[in-house]
Structures are given as C-alpha cells and as structure tokens.
Image (cartoon, rainbow, N blue to C red; front, side, top):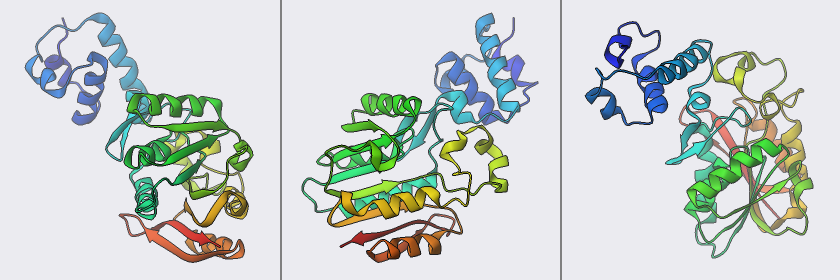
Amino acid sequence: MDSLRSLSRDSKLPRLEWQMLWQHVLQVPRAWLIAHDTDPLAPEALARFSDLQARRLAGAPMAYLLGRREFMGHDFEVSPAVLIPRPETELLVETGLDYLKGRAAPRVLDLGTGSGAIAVSIALACPAATVLATDLDPDALAVAQANARRLGARVEFLRGNWYHALSGHKGFDLIVSNPPYIAAGDFHLQEGDVRFEPIAALTDGSDGLTALRAIIHGAGPWLAPQGALLVEHGWDQAQAVRQLLRQAGFKQLASLPDLAGIDRVTGGIYN
C-alpha cells in the first residue's frame, strides 16, 4: 500500500508544497508526516491528494487549495470568491492603525472587503474601534463574515457597491480600501495566481482608476472632520491617486512604499 515515503520519490511538486497539501489532506502537522511517513494511506486520502496535486500543477493557487492564507499574523479562510490576501496589503492595515493611535473610539470603514482581511485585522488590533465593511458580492461577504466569527473580530458587514451600502452611517475617522486597480489588458492579469482570482476584484475593465475615483470623490460626506482616506493602488498609480485626492479636497497627501520599494498606499486628510 502506498505511503508518504513511497509517494515522495515521484512527487511532481516542490517538496514544501507537497508537504503542505498532505498536511491539509490528512489534517496533521508537518512533524506527523515525518514520524508516520511509512504508514499506509487510505484510498480516499490518495484520491483527495491526487485531485489537489493536479489542480496545483494546472496553476491553482495554494491558498485556494488549502482554503486559507496568513495575513497580519492571522489565518484567513479564502475561496475563489475573494482575492488572496497579500503581504503588500499589510502596509494599508499598518498605516491605518498608525493613524488610529490615540483615538479613543474611532470609526473605520473598509470598502470592498473581500475576505475581510483588512477590516478584521484592524478590528483585532484596535478593539475599541467600530469597524464597518462593505462588499457587493454576497459570496465574498459570506467569507468575510466567517473570518470575523472565527477570529473573534467585531465587524459589521453591509452589502452594496462602495458607499451605496451605507445607510445612516457617517462620521468615519478612517476609510480604507484595496479596490480593483489593474487596468484592462495589463499582462499581470494573465500571470500566476491572478489568473484564478475574481476578475471583478482585480480590474475595473478600464484604466484601473474607476473604483479609485469613485472612492476618493465620494469619501468627503462620510468622513468625520480631519478624517483620513487610505487606498492601495498599482505600482504606477501613486501620482494619479494623489491628484485625485487633491481634486477631492484632501490635504497632507502621502504615498508609502511597500517592501519592494514601490509606492503602494496613498492617502490624505479631509477638511
């Protein structure tokens, strides 16, 4: 009967990915795999692994195969209904948390929440905050709500497109968003994990600035005096985003680089 040791000799995947998939199939830690590498494997486990391996070899993201991705020190459930949380988006959360320091009971809005990674991370790091999160996609909201429940974060989720989801909610100290900002036809849409992610969460089908324009120009009425807006954007969009913020009446504009040195988050203060 097949064992992990016998199967490892003919593995078509990098060893780390092979081990991660087996840990997922068997629901065991890595140490168990090593200690039990000669144990016979059940037919259903072999079939499950074979399916996952085939999908991975076809390019499916590991995050979707495992159903989770780490972000800000927390494990978030993910599915093809939501973008996979990425390290560069942690800059958006960290910058937002820096802005909230010293505020007794801040109000925070996350637009286009997806998996809920941004909203949930802020709520966990700043438990005194009132955090609202919106998304148009009910499947994405279901993922976000499940993450908030599992991680014990207090977040109110609303369905709707950007500010259209809000009713009776104003006076936000901070609005954050990681909207679709890839321009239609950008070659990045045909590469890597992006090929498997929800297209509407990646691109506006136009110049990549449609959602950013709507969020920036619509923010004023929803912000408290001296409220801040922070958005994630593409590698070449910082100047355009600063211009949009300036046109919308924001001051103290700043763009911050990610770990690769690319301006990734831009924001400003309103009024």
